[in-house]
Length: 263
Length: 291
Ligand SMILES: Nc1ncnc2c1ncn2[C@@H]1O[C@H](COP(=O)(O)OP(=O)(O)O)[C@@H](O)[C@H]1O
Ligand SMILES: [Mg+2]
Image 1 (cartoon, rainbow over the protein chains, first blue to last red):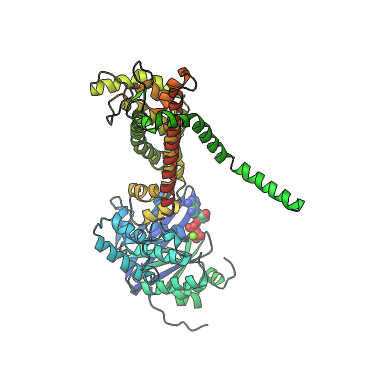
Image 2: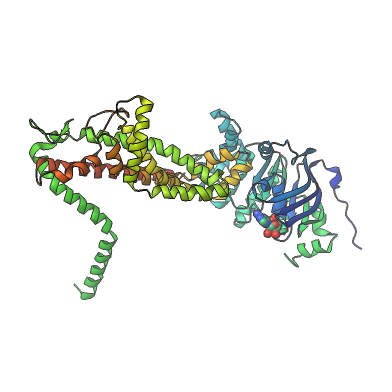
């Protein structure tokens, strides 16, 4: 028997998001089955699992982006700060301001760099030019893009490289001051160097935000996250500190997946 | 020169000629119009054209100032644009982004049907319905005004504006909208601040095509604008457009007369105007494509 190394107890971390017995359907097809997990604040939680296992679906339940897909149904609870985000009175706009999202494929608007980052604050009522400039600068600094673009904030965002575009999307998400940042395979379309930059960036951002990142890259999950959740066929199979999951998986399926036997 | 190289050159020339046929045709039109029009520029002179009275048949002195015709056309077309663009774009946004699928199923074919109505029929509608309405609403002695013409033209341009704008709006990538919504924007904010700007080049193209249909339009305007060749900026006055003038007078004019040549001058002016509008629109389009 291997010696079990002491691991940080998930229960001791302050939970930011609590998911309770979450089921989700696309039409008649159930995509998520009874997910229950507490996602800790100011940590990086990685969601891993083979393609089609429901990682993106789960991620989208956290900012209610699934609401935009017709004929979907959800059961169970998602609590952020003990507040049920699917309760009747919830303001989805306010929710999405608190829970930012970065997409798999970078999707800057066909606007200038400045206008991309300023979009969110403007939507939420910031009119003052100085204030906007300040927010844009701060967000771009946080997204580690400022130095590369500070002299050309008014060129089209589409002129940036793929990696820069993705960091711009991160800056855009940060500009509305979210508490939680959802990232759906944010580096899957990028070259290794840009990927490394994004990973470094996630390391930086962990101090300020609760980050939940989907990835199907095992190395990436082990590099950037402290907590890992393994999904398989719409179920949460195993959940725990990243190091423990990767060194001593408790479930056979987890072990098979991280050792590359399937997926 | 080697025979081979000569052949190559001939083929290239042939290709170039066929590729630029459209340009050639435009040039030919210019040349043809110019040939009929230039004697007028020489004889009564360009000053005559720039005068402010169009009175081609008169017992005292005929007068061929095209200014009132140009202002008439500008007024009617400009008003028609002002009416049809906001209306067309809003309708396109509604159909593309707001309407339920069943509404779209009904609206789209109806609008396309509208685009196919012959302009004479629209002219009748203008005479029987719009003109009396304008007369009543504004308490005018006659309902045959620039506004009536503009409303009719707008009616004719709107289907084009709607259906092409709608295509442009629907082809905006879903990922832009998701990004906006995920930032907490409402659906309406997303439409106005992301979708419409992203579709702008297509919308401008739609407006251009709509205007293209309108500026050359003759029949409907001739029926409802009253055809008084006066210079005015008031939409409630009767005006006469360039197209209506050519259509009304060309049939009866003596071949080779000053009047005949003056009408060709009007034709060239019309052509140049269309050209300018297109050029400006292209410029706007280029500026917005970068985003
Ligand atoms: N918009 C959708 N409509 C219907 N089914 C969907 C939709 N999105 C995802 N699914 C299905 O839900 C399951 C989970 O998909 P997804 O969450 O995208 O998995 P992952 O991100 O882990 O690859 C898959 O079987 C997929 O086919
Ligand atoms: Mg996915």
